[in-house]
Length: 159
Image (cartoon, rainbow, N blue to C red; front, side, top):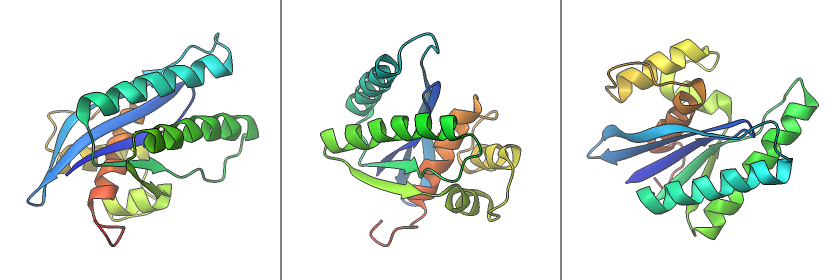
């Protein structure tokens, strides 16, 4: 099974592709889709859509997993993340892929066993679980890999 994890954002959308075969998880690819703050929002969202469509076309995942929007202190940031998340949901639907959604708490619990883990702890566990030579960078890519790992762990009954 191949899983594409997505950590949505308008400036930086993290992605991580993993495979799960016979219980073993392997990182296939990870990185970020970046957009310039100087572009109008509709153009930034289009870049996310086009790049994500290309990633899906290249890797052909079985499932897309995305982080749910959670409480944010800055409403402007929350709105822009929500817009990027909407693009992810639409892209998954356009590709006819199954979509799973997880809260940050679920992702942290799945990867570290502790729902209040910090970013560094999540990165270290992602590195260990996927047997990577170094911490995945940037943080958004590591978060996307963590989301993919969470999806692989059977949080949803039908996996």
